Image (cartoon, rainbow, N blue to C red):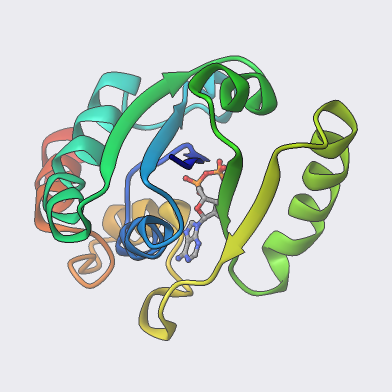
Length: 164
Ligand code: ADP
């Protein structure tokens, strides 16, 4: 039984994240989606709202892939969270070069703390590769159409949070 941990802020969840969920399901028997509290990043959505949106968008994937998906809020160190949930694999999504430098450092430091937990990087389908939560929020604030980037419930959540 292999457990994978896919951590992120998911502020909010996008079609890029959802594409990675599906791909991650082919690698593990149980997928834990770690939703980071990340107070420092000053998230737009509360932890409860982010968890609810992730949960809502996992139900169908869990059914389709026959994988158990658990949504797990966490505030501690990533490697500690992986140990707590029994994950042998950390999954990260990788966009163009911008993500690389940060991930490169993270993997080095995580390995120094626990060399038995492997990290796998997955790329979303070309259609979703450029999507970033930060840009979705900016586009929405500037009256752009974000329905190509996030699922319908997230469009509604943005409406409730930011008006319009
Ligand atoms: P973090 O604060 O960890 O960057 P995010 O919620 O922004 O949290 O992203 C979580 C993970 O999903 C990260 O590994 C990030 O690189 C990846 N990710 C985000 N958007 C995409 C995308 N469009 N395609 C592939 N991976 C993505």
